[in-house]
Image (cartoon, rainbow, N blue to C red):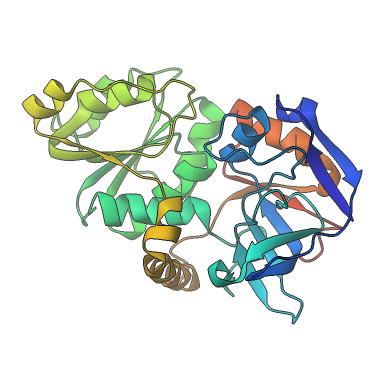
Length: 321
């Protein structure tokens, strides 16, 4: 079969190689899946760079999220077990963690990591309520766009922060009530103006760095900042005295832990997301569907922050996606 292999750590476009390799053999409790579509996530770039919390042995195939097909014909979504990741024709996954793909979504849209992360962050961690104000950083990206749609579905007023006019247009299409272009506007001043000086109840931050600092300046009394990741490359060191004085909460979110600590919640979340998709309340924005040969360049684009929504790798001719 064809699979992308990483033999040494570095930038995805430099270290990913498309090769002919043996089809993987599932271990105990695992199943073999035909890859119908593989969503590109920022952790795929971190894996290539050797900067992710999981470091598979070299060589490995990246690709942490797929829509696949079981040998008995079921369409499912799964997180492949490394080193047999999703940027390949076949992948391996733990049978117990495989979930049915939502009928309302096609292969490239089949939601999982981004929307599960958003649901746990906004509902399980932050307790977002209808009528509250939600600020989403990187609102046009794969993770941010999911939070925007989930926030709107929950009845929140959503303020999206993006970088550039093109991404601002995407954020408006996703449903943001207010869009702030950080390249052209003062984020803090714009948020305060949009909220009448009150600030926002919940901040969803997959960026870190300067975005986190901005969040602390606009979070409202008893507000919640959900720390999702550090795509900006800088991990902030929060001043806890500031959280005390302003009376806000800083909440960490590592979605992967729920798979081991409380997998029933993952199943419950999947059921909630499937229902939202069925009624059209959420629908992933797929900005690119690239063939398998284009995976390395696409992972690099996601790593460089120049994409919007979701970028999906579709092995074969892409007809199934």
